[in-house]
Image (tube, helix red, strand yellow):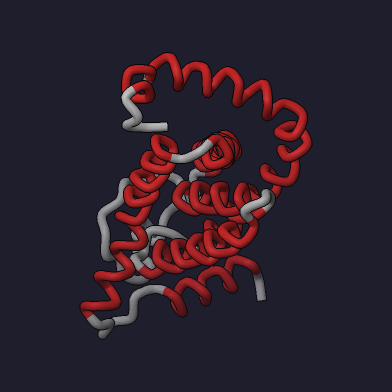
Length: 198
């Protein structure tokens, strides 16, 4: 069996079935489209009210995820593989521009964050976030905007970036955090003085 056929078979297995329940479709749409905004809000609150350890973890995750996402965008633009709805495969539950399918940007973001925490002192949180990333992978295929191979690609790109970037992070993290925290303190000094944020 070819990789293309395996990818297609997995897609048909995971894509929304013809008589899917409204509850399942709503859940998948939420995970596929809206969960990322919940994550942004959580990270914003964690940054504003978290201690230095929390802020350090957030910056590490942001940097590693940004690199992963940049690579994902470049590959997507170069390869420009069609999404399932472009070639009329399966069913689609949400609207999406016909941009390149491989690798998935959503999966790049969630996997980048997950591996950043997994390869840190917050490994237990990282394990949970990996499961969240896999849930996002399922949902993006379920709603018909990605193939499974798009998810695998993003997952392993994020893994590679995190492993390759760790030595660089360990070497430069104190300098990076020094500049970022100084900038944060300067921009938010009034709120910090009043004790409203950290």
